[in-house]
Length: 223
Image 1 (cartoon, rainbow, N blue to C red):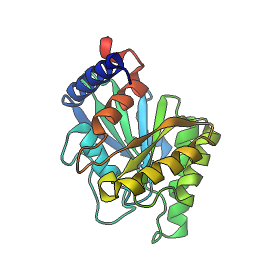
Image 2: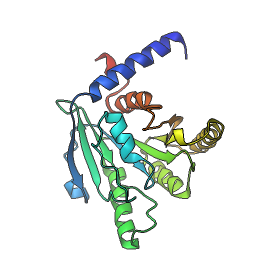
Image 3: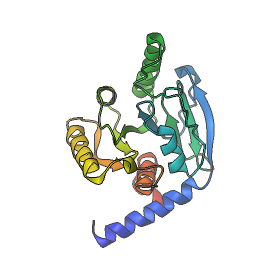
C-alpha cells in the first residue's frame, strides 16, 4: 500500500467510525420471510457457525457493548435480526442464524436453512454477506456449504476470520493462506481475507470501512 493509499484508508476508517458512533438501533427479528422489513435500504448480512463470535463482532463493529446479544448457548439465534444504521437510516446489518447446530432437532435445523436460503435468493437489497470463520479451526464443511449456497444465490461475500488473538501468528498465517486459496475457488467470494479480533480490536476498523463501502458504494466517505 502506497502512502497515498494508506492515507485514504485511514480517512475511510475514521469516517466509518464516525458513522457507527451515531444511530445504530435494533429494528426487528424475522422468523419468516413475511416478517422482513420493507426493502428500502441496502443490507449487509453476517453468518457463521454457532459460537464463531458473530455477536461479539457485531458489537465491536458498531462500538456497542450489547447491541447483539452474545449467547452462552451456541445456535440461540434462530431468526434474522435487523439493525438500522444512520439517521435517517442509511443501511441495515442482518444477523443471520448460526449454522452447525449440533444439538438442534433436525426439523429446527431445516427450518433455519430454509429461512436463510430463501432470504439469500430473494433479497434484492442484500449487498454483501460476511462469512465468519473461527481462526482456531479454519474452514469447516458447514462453512463450505454456506459458501456454496452463497455462490448459487449469486451473493458476493467476504470471508472474515474471527478470534485471531487466540492463535499464534505462525498458525494464523497458515490459516489465512489456506482460507484465501480455497476462497479463490468460489465465484462469489471476495479475494481479500479479513483477519479480526473483537476482543483486541484487530482488523475491526478496516472491516468497518469495508462494510460501509459494500453498503453505500466506494465514494461514500466523500459524499
